[in-house]
Image (tube, rainbow, N blue to C red):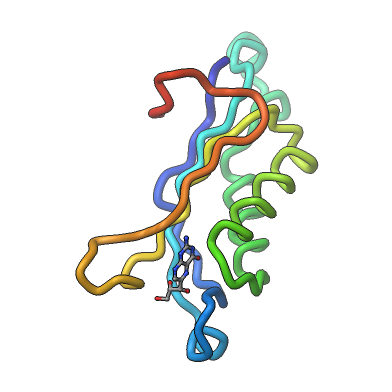
Length: 124
Ligand SMILES: Nc1nc2c(c(=O)[nH]1)N=C([C@H](O)[C@@H](O)CO)CN2
């Protein structure tokens, strides 16, 4: 299956398990790889037949910005379900990074695959 991807989507969110994390917004970085048959928009040159990455990025930023989960895992599950329901994405890989959460690491986070498998070579 072909893919449409979004890399390094930066969104501020209320997320975390500790008390102080319920008071301040923290920056998350999202990478999204979504299964999509690009042959149809490739032939028609029509954005309405494409998985419009601009619309997806706007929707994801809105959902994340309004969310109040404790765990990155819970946010990831919620986003995956919304993308499959509202954009009819058949499968996806989602990575959410929380830079700064562990001072000695460049970044930490979670990555999930849901729906149709994207294949062994999961990079965009
Ligand atoms: N697997 C996870 N581990 C941890 C999470 C998480 O969301 N998933 N969250 C925290 C804290 O909120 C941490 O980010 C505060 O710095 C700890 N571990």
